[in-house]
Amino acid sequence: MYCICTVNKLQKEMIQKLENINELIELLTLEQLDVNLYRGHNLETPWGRVFGGQVLGQALSAAYRTVPEDRYAHSLHGYFILSGDISHPIIYEVDTIRDGGSFTTRRVTAKQYGKPIFVMATSFQLKQDGFDHQNEMPQVTQPEDLLTDMQQAELIKKSSPGLYKKMLGRYQGALDFKPVDKLSFDEIDNGTGLRNVWMKSSETIDIALPLQHQILAFASDYDLLISAIYPHRTKFDMNKLFLASLDHAMWFHRDFNFNDWLLFSINSPSASNSRGMGYGSIFDRNGGLVATVIQEGLMRIMKSKS
Image (cartoon, rainbow, N blue to C red; front, top):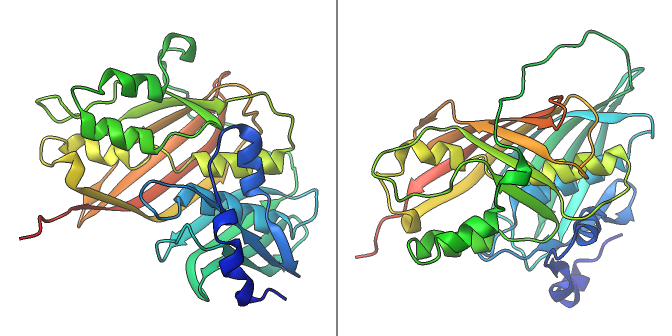
């Protein structure tokens, strides 16, 4: 069994930067401690809390370790309970709720210091034939004609130093992001909640669908809540805005490959009561809808200390 006395020795080893896609795969590959019990280390973040996409990907990884090889995730529903400490490993405990003829259900609890920081229910299904339809992919500029998010950041380095610093904080070398829309909070008018971002692996990888799902879960936590900020960007100072994910739901519709660009098309249907919602559709280059994502997050303006 896992011994809490080993944590201090492991703390420094559990914090990791992502310089390439293999390091992301390593981050998502958990250490097994016992039956249905796993340990994961953390991505280094400038804000000092665990990145929500990391917990999503690792929790899905833990669940996948307990299901038959012919079952693939089709949905997950998670709640962020406490902000995670990046200096402390995360323990993932999987409850094997149900193993049916076509569907398999798992519940995953992520813990630090003995307390849950995240809970998730995940459903897996056999590959089966059925009806097929989908919404169409929006017509946007192709990724070859766009700058990466970090290239965009360099363009606003002098005009928006605060936003530039925040953008640098999200940099990692495992995935490439190319926003279709110019990222700026300097416009006089408020914008819309619509955003489109291309994303793919920074290097060619040959991995099975379960790991593709885990990487997509990781990536799905980028950019969602930004869509809820844009309609209000003249009402706040970016440096005083506090954002935190509250819950996250995701449905996997069709197979995909992260070696080619995926379009993350996002909008914000609502913001109220200090919460904002992001709704995203993820398409492959051929227009196939591969996943749908919904997230609600806390949006607060931090008060100045008197």
